[in-house]
Image (cartoon, rainbow, N blue to C red):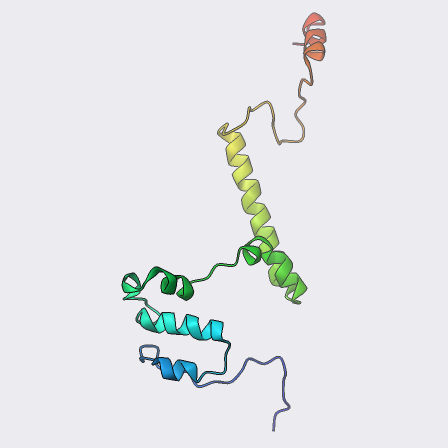
Amino acid sequence: MQPHNPYAPPVAKVDDIEEDHSDESIEALPVSEKWKDRFKAIAHAGGVKFPNLKDLPKNERRKAFSFNVLAFLFGPVYYIAKGMWKKGLALFIGVRAGRDCAEYCAWLFRVGQDRERSWLRGERRVRNACEYRLLQENGFG
């Protein structure tokens, strides 16, 4: 006999995906009312492929889909706080790399900023008009 693992996913019977679920069978589920409403909306939309989604009223459509803004904004922190630090770190690095690539492309194609304001670290910028004039007078400009 195997010892009980508290971190193992729950063992449940996997039903046929195309099977129709009635409101009564959804009401019998041991989940919160919020999830029952979501499952009912998905069942009324025709199942996981949502063929009847456009026929649903707007408030019921909203129940079938939900978006958590805080989870979107603080996703890496959530994963790290839950102990999934590898996934959180990978997500953070991926988002940071994507942001850096977008910033580089914006700089490269001069979107929203001058090329003089370069993010490249080695370039020297003229800080003010006096420094520019001094450089011009001494033959460096």
